[in-house]
Length: 130
Length: 309
Ligand code: B12
Ligand SMILES: Nc1nc2c(ncn2[C@@H]2O[C@H](COP(=O)(O)OP(=O)(O)OP(=O)(O)O)[C@@H](O)[C@H]2O)c(=O)[nH]1
Ligand SMILES: [Mg+2]
Image (tube, rainbow over the protein chains, first blue to last red):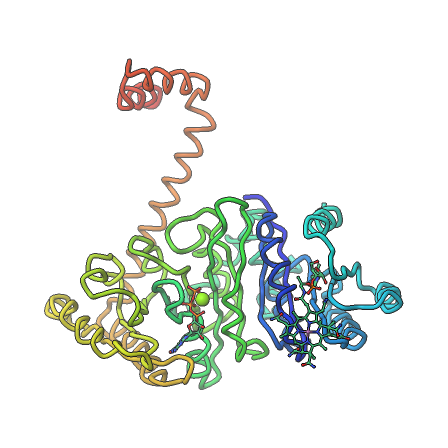
């Protein structure tokens, strides 16, 4: 059996904007990936624990609430603590350019902003896994 | 070897990685290594139509099963899209209460083309959780219709979940799904029609109850309000006790091994035939002839069989 790329899409914190997360989850399914969607209002701890148990290749966070500068670093830290740094972190949402630069420096692999075409996101994921 | 050691210590990342290897079939020897450690878990299956509340029931039941320091491993199966080969695995959305519990492990699986309500590797992944030391292995099937009954070949206790919207009892009787139920649950007990469905199911079950010393209980639950859950868990435990005391646990587990071995034989022979015996070009030519009605499909099989017997 071929190996499938597995991706967890998470909505951390109190952010209720789930349209983008659902659009991405569906697009990734349609591109042939196995997508685990854990639903709204997740603790960072739950997301990291789920990512480990599901043995995903990538965690994708969708954040439109403005809390990205606390949540991304927290997820990165938890992954490190749990020896799961091999899991790639990407994300999307309402995130200003200057923050994106800082997040990339911290170890987030890539961030997509409103209007990013889903096929571009799919191509990107294929390019980093293969 | 290191992975196996961490696995046997119960480290979750190691359990997760072993599952991946088994699921992808990348390390056939791994199953040999873990198999001697299996046989200690009790397997519970939850099946029923899409949206019946299977995941919500798991979420509500597990805290009861964890009592007395028990550990629970969960496999939640969702369908792979036949068009893209991808899958959206969403059972975890309903299992939020369990996400951070140290004694719980949840793994989502996509069916990857298998049609029986489970993935073809679900049985092996259940063995992985068994070997990892979980006392209960809970398996949630995809939302099933009438014929996806693989679950009963894996689980000691199969719980079939219906809801008032599932359609009338006749439809359920027609469906093989009642035949695999050890316990029937009518969930969404808060909706109208639940009591009527229970009455109808009692009639549908009458014949089975007559012919067995297990009484095939029918329970009402409201998973999202935690109603009827204590009774469901204690009924599962009585079924376990019944199987153990009557000696059926052993006979049924041996039966399941027979079924499993037969399945594997079929798989192996099929692969062997296609790789070594059947000349694919010749087969294609014969198919063309059969299409033109010059030979029958049975003739083709006879020709292939000549090479073996
Ligand atoms: C629709 C909407 C809502 C809906 C949400 C419905 C829902 N269930 O999702 C409702 C009306 C409920 C709502 C409420 C609120 N909203 Co609002 N909302 C929007 C709006 C107009 C569009 C968001 C959207 O759905 N876009 C469509 C999706 C497909 O795009 P997307 O999420 O950006 O996703 C794309 C990319 O970002 C990326 N992406 C996103 N996630 C991910 C993840 C991964 C892994 C990857 C790879 C890519 C990726 O890919 C997607 C495709 O291109 C935005 C404004 C805007 N233009 O973005 C405001 C906006 C997000 N909302 C805002 C606010 C303030 C609120 C409220 C607080 C308003 C209030 N005071 O009550 C509440 C909060 C609700 C809550 N509990 O969180 C602000 C946020 C400001 C900020 N972060 O600094 C915005 C930016 C409006 C604004 N300009 O002020 N909102
Ligand atoms: N009213 C009511 N709703 C319920 C009950 N149990 C579950 N639900 C709701 O029914 C919907 C489906 O529940 P799930 O637990 O996801 O059902 P499922 O059988 O696991 O669904 P699939 O895995 O998609 O087949 C959700 O919106 C639940 O909140 C219940 O007892 N009463
Ligand atoms: Mg479910």
